Length: 173
Image (tube, rainbow, N blue to C red; front, side, top):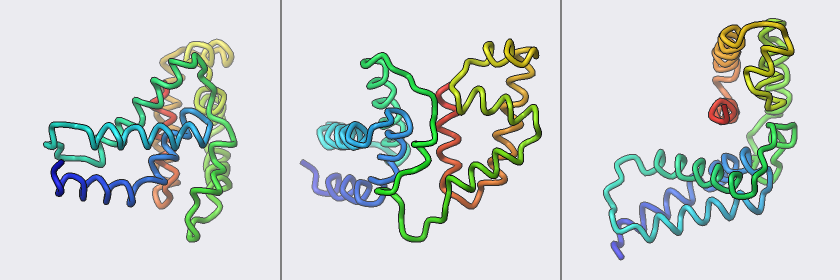
């Protein structure tokens, strides 16, 4: 096996393992499963014959996301994003501030209708059509509110790593 390839993979593993576990956990809601998914992705990466990956970090993140979604499909369970995703004490670095509070405050500060739509779709896992029915608005209005919510939250949470979590939520749709 190519020594340079091993060094690249090892550096990526050491630098991004916790973040990748967080990504997997946000999908599967089980720390052991999340760690298994990340480790499987790295094993698969090590076994690759083709070592010509330009953006290895992006490739691994996408692989973790896809492996997580495959795991969900296999187990036929899709849970909405919940409060427990925001609390990962094992993966918090010492300098992290109370991010779950920060996210709650940012969501709370959304315009009222925008907040209602975001809570239904992103936090409760409802489909856009269901949210539209519940709130008696059109699906396009739901889409507009979701787009507006993500835009506001991106600005509010730009200094935190948790905007990554919100991006993951958008990929569930």
